[in-house]
Each structure stands twice: as structure tokens, then as C-alpha cells.
Length: 117
Image (cartoon, rainbow, N blue to C red; front, side):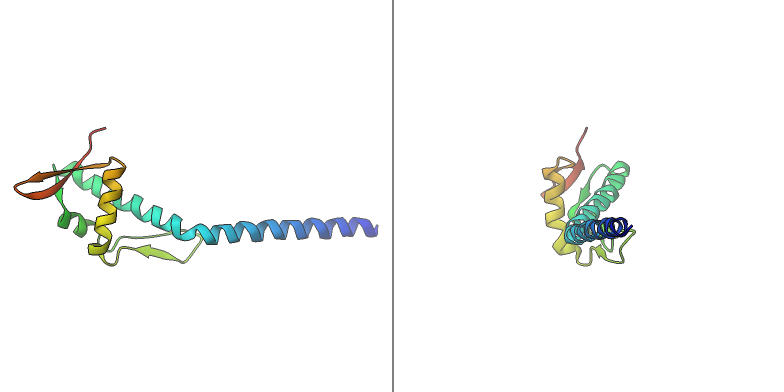
């Protein structure tokens, strides 16, 4: 009878350890996940606008992604674009590197087109 309770206590302890490890892993990877979600949401906004227009300039993209925020449903932590001037260069590099946008020059100014699939 006593050994039965010991087994239940051990099972409870193992379950607690597994849940603790899972939560710790989630907390450590949360910042990367939020950044990935922010890039994905901004990409979606830019793609939607580029379906309406032929091309966009850098300052137009800055205006589109200004004040975009994302968060995970199980966490109160959020991340957002608070300074689009600092965010725009890495974001455009990400989009061109992943072949979502292509860069071109029109009348001496850089413009960005949606890359044809």
C-alpha cells in the first residue's frame, strides 16, 4: 500500500519537472518567436499593399509598418515597431534575402517590387 503512494508521488514529481522544463524552454525562446512573428506580420502588410500598387518606396513601407505589434496569446509580453527608421533596413534586407521583394531604381530612387512566384 505504501509503495503505491510512493509511485504516485514520483509520477507527480516527474510531471512537475517536465512542465517546468517546457516552460523554461518557452521563456528562453520567446524573444526569437516574437521577432519572427513581427517580421511575418510586417511581410503580410507589405505584400497586401504591393498587390494594390506596382511598387513601394522605403518611406512608404516605413509608414505601413509603423506601430505594428504582435504578442503570443498565452503571454502578456508584446513586441512592436516603435522606431520604423531603425527597423526598416534589417526588415528590407530580410525580405530581399528571402526573395519576397526585389529592389530596383526608378528616377534615382530605390523602389521595392513584389517578387513574382
